[in-house]
Amino acid sequence: MDIKHKALGVHLLTASGAVFAMLAMLAAVEGHWSLMFLWLVVAFFVDGIDGPLARKYDTKTNAPIYDGVLLDLIIDYLTYVFVPAYALFKHPEMLPGWAGWIVILVITFTSAMYFADSRMKTKDFSFSGFPGCWNMVVLVVFALKPEYSVTLVLVIALAATMFVPVKFVHPTRTKRWRTVTLPTSLAWTFFAGWAAWVDFHPQSWAHTGLLLTSVYLLGAGAMQQIIYGREG
Image 1 (cartoon, rainbow, N blue to C red):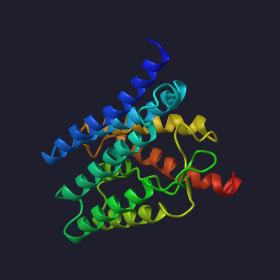
Image 2: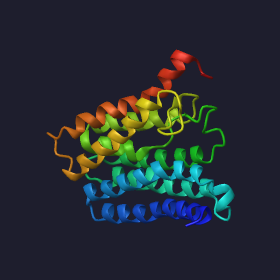
Image 3: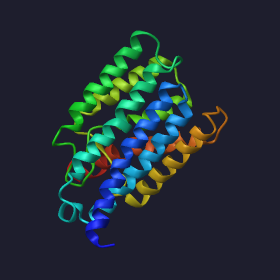
Image 4: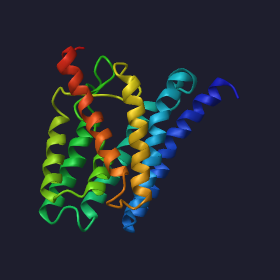
């Protein structure tokens, strides 16, 4: 297989995320929340490997007919934003009444604006502002089941953070602390799959792993700013 076919294969891999998004949505409509998250975890894993593969095979040069960045953004909006927002709104025990409407409108609107923002990446390839990873947030909410008011405040706070210059590390592209960030991201993926596989059993150790890895992934970029400065 020559490099052009390999580059095209990367685009096809990225596009498979749309299939996983649809499978997740169908599961959500039926109320099969654990199955929905399993499909989202698969999509999350694909999203984690297609970027490095795209750079390895230089898809911009070897398969230029498809815009990999645009394709990735479309898939990310479906799997990171749309499906998890629907789940948070639709689950009968998560957000009652008006709180559910506020959350679903805030998530979808702010994420659409963020994904279209040309300033979303910093010089060190971190994200400027919370990168709209609502799939991760909602999965942790499903696992830990906090009071709805806590979920409401968390969503509003993270949505506001999308538009302030606070860094959030990219698992593969942010070089600083990558030896910690990448294994932590893989561990988060493992704990997420585990939590969904056991149907978010309250005594599962996966919940502790999810909480610890999520705290690191949410705070690492801001800690780098504190230690090294905004441009560091």
